Image (tube, rainbow, N blue to C red; front, side):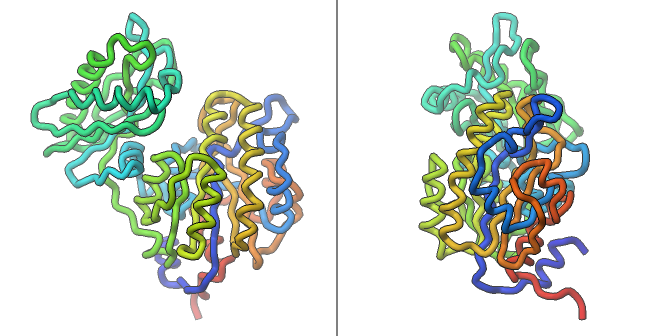
Amino acid sequence: MDIHDLTRDLNTKNDAKIVMLVGDGLGGLPQEPGGPTELEAAQTPNLDALVKQGICGLSLPVLPGISPGSGPGHLGLFGYDPLKYQIGRGALEATGIGFELTGHDVAIRCNFCTLDSTGNITDRRAGRISTEESAPLAKKLRNVKIPGVEIFVEPVKEHRFVVVLRGEGLRGQVNDTDPQQTGVPPLKPVARDTASERTAEVCDQFVKQANELLSGQAKANGCTLRGVAEKPELPSYEEVYGLRAAAIAVYPMYKGLARLVGMDVVGEAKTLDDQMDVLAANWSSYDFFFIHFKYTDSTGEDGNFAAKVAKTEQLDQCVPRILALNPDVVIVTGDHSTPSMLASHSWHPVPTLLSAKNCRSDRCETFGEAECIQGGLGQFEAKYLMSLALANAGRLGKYGA
């Protein structure tokens, strides 16, 4: 029996409201031994006040020592075992922009990149070009033609776009072409099994034609392919938790993940203030709200400690607007750690705060890694966070006689 079998059996209906506020890549590291992490350096009076009413801990997105991608990181937060349910980033990105995947589709999350005259990557994200610059280039790539395959190319946001390959004999087990470093050429797409060899060949042809179409561009004169994936099948939030769930996100990938687990993506928001407006407008219609904040992650990936501190402080400022709605359970956490000193996702456990009328508070005083490691939740696998949320919301009955 897995956790979803229990939540199905023990589900209890009531009017309780649960809010999960996710600071993407929230966890960090000190810049020097004994110094503060980004979260500890930030001025977070609202989160600190919430800590004193709640209970803290450190969550493991997957397993000890494993650095997760955003997909597995969020699946864990949503209560889905990321080792059992594996979703490629391409499927997330495609679903996030509202593309309806079929059983004959392979979706790919792509980045525009900058190549030098020798074909080496000088910028993996093409200078994070604006959506206004990148969207026409993505549409230009619709001119790529490969016999026997229908190709869809859709702009996403900034340097990102989605490619969906549709046809018989396509499978999603193909390695990324992004080498995760500069000064080297993009990798060749390589199939991880024989069933995906046709897909790898198509990917290789796509990149060659795309680079020809992009030649002469100052920034986005190349592309890399990431997260090649087929459509996954997951049980919905309504099925496993009995919750009407809403997602309030800015970036398409996180909207996609929410849709794949049966959440409704509500509102159109560009800023955190917009997201709070959407939350208030939809408060009466849903039981669970997932609110995603991207910029604690992107600043960490940029290696910018001060900017991540500033974005963490921005996240703190939305807490009073959430509390004004009088939720029964509030969770604040991240899908993984993105320390600015590493400029990448890491394996470090993620600070987690749960505040509820029924929770047993601990002695933590502030929201940070050093405090959370002493918290009452201890160090736990993120996939159990939803059962804790349901229990504190009075939405789980007793197990056994």
